[in-house]
Length: 313
Length: 295
Figure: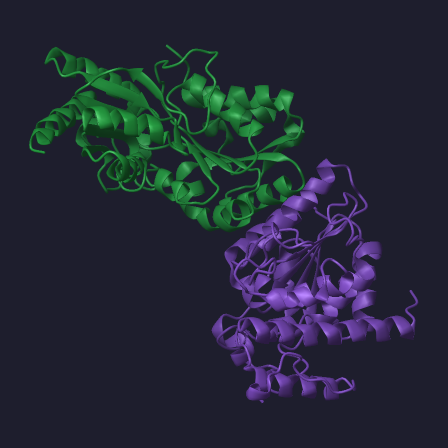
């Protein structure tokens, strides 16, 4: 089994820290949870503790970026994408500063931490920021590739880190490209589009559907903004039935991005799997996935529903 | 330190021009903040024409001092100072607030030569200043300073105190904050809406050295800036609390919250500028873009 995604994050920070001497990491009293502590141990003078003051941390990151550094201001996704949204918006995104924002603890796997800590609106909030690129990596290899692409690309970037162990989707040589999705399985009846941890569950759903001879095409969109419009439109054109699955609210994130795109380019039946406009309360991960109807069987059910509905067109 | 009377006269002239050009651009653009631009005229004159190590011909010069306008709505005064200093032609001020202009209504570092950060949402600038002061440490640059100008009402914002706390914690003695303590906010007096007193005590409690000055007295400003940079360097950030008058320079705008955001009609601007000239013993000049129909 691969290591937890947050460990991959911490280790990749160290790797990149060796290659890029102007890379700095900022923390808001979460480093042993987020695993930025690995960077702190190797580069103690390049690790800046900001205390429980996230808005200030993002301003400091802006100042450092202006001075030519590559700052990674690290905190939980809820604090980055909600509490410090104005700071990210005006101090960082508006002037297109070279700040790389890791949002830890996204969505359902944050489980018992509850409503205040389980980020579900971060995809929506970040997607709506001009100049901000947004990624939700599907596995550790993609996470490392996203981080590498982040330091090689100029401008502000937000990427999600799930507190979970994700099976490998890609190999170690995988190269991430902004605006490029992957077709992981070809199919003809329905398109399943996943991001982050949900892509694996889409692959499991495809297996369930195959038993009933419903052939699902599975796409992975690690790059949420910019999104691979060509890949999605072409698939929707073919299947006319689309199911999106995200570890986030169905309002404003992947489902919305796909809805926008598909309505304009390849009108199809659409079903969105994700957090249905509610706060994610305290619970165990599997219980929550069941409660929120975000399991492979729920994706498969939505797919069947979509296939049936397209018959009515 | 000795300051010649020529130097003082020169800086007072710059401050007068900053006020005049602020009215010109706010009237032409039909939008802007006269009150808060007027109160910082002497401060900006002293910074840009005496204290700051900057090179208008090389805005990215690595050995330059940094100035951040956190109270970014007062940007007309800063545009005036930058234009007079040679960052862009003075004529360009008449594009202020036009669509596509290099001179936006608040600070946009991507468009305007000489601006170091973008802003407008109050409370954010001091954090950026902390980041840049830390940046100078990482760059092993002990020579340059970061100056950050805040408003008094702006100090209601919690983020200001997060930044202050972190500056104190990191002993950032290359950071100098200046507060335009003009006692007036957008909708009234600071002490009535959300008082900040005891103000100096708050900064001291966060680990800052506090210097106070009459923000319209050029001689006193030069002395306090000298002291902040060259005398008091012992492991603490410094805040200069500049006691000023909002709208200083014209009777109607002084100490008057209604001129926080208010742009005069051209005819009114003309009268204001004539009064400004009289108040500062200059030869009378009115609004340069007055139509006969505006009078």
